[in-house]
Image 1 (cartoon, rainbow, N blue to C red):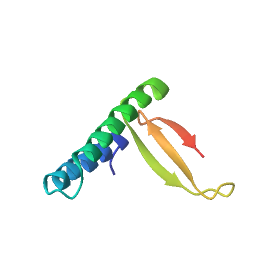
Image 2: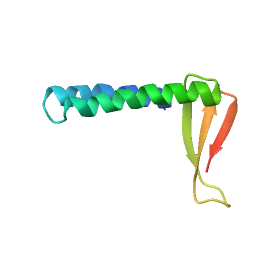
Image 3: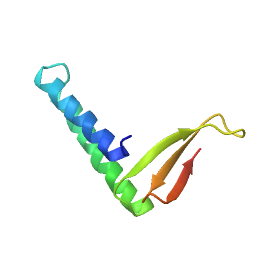
Length: 79
């Protein structure tokens, strides 16, 4: 299992390879780099952390919910 920032970094590394083979434009990779910066900034501002783990769960009340595990102890539900 990867954290959100690890997953974005892996994705961007894979995209960089595709840009080199001309399967994607350089500007597309730049946009994903901006996304990575924005996610990191948001996590610091909103949750006071640099990374988190996202898990999906299903409950009786909702079809599915995403939960962020922050600092290995706090959980924030995004429904």
